[in-house]
Length: 154
Image 1 (spheres, helix red, strand yellow):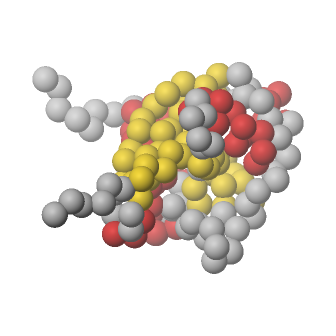
Image 2 (spheres, helix red, strand yellow):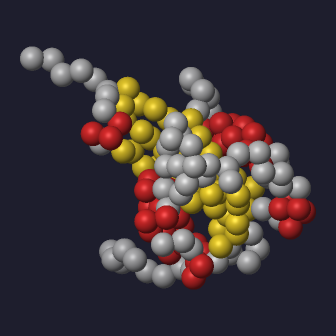
């Protein structure tokens, strides 16, 4: 018996932060046809076929916030294989994006209900976060925004 191979859907997410080490989250629209409606998550989205991940993220950030960030660095990739996605595997690559005050002042929200910069202590509770994004947000908070050791030293 041959099992059907699952297709991989590539997605990107931006861990946007400022000089005060606050992370920018998007309050998603409350539309049934979108993933995680009404929750807080990261700006980003699906890539086009064979699109470079950083280029895809730059495109998504421009489409959603009308800015061209200059500092983008790889942070984490998560692969989600779940009954929720049926015959797909969702691979989401996350990049840290530092925004200067000048870049922040140019933001024009084009997608989502709202956006807000949160300190680590102000982050929405887990049930209000998009599930896959929540993992990246928490890891980013622990490793960069408020660094602390969460893995054993070998």
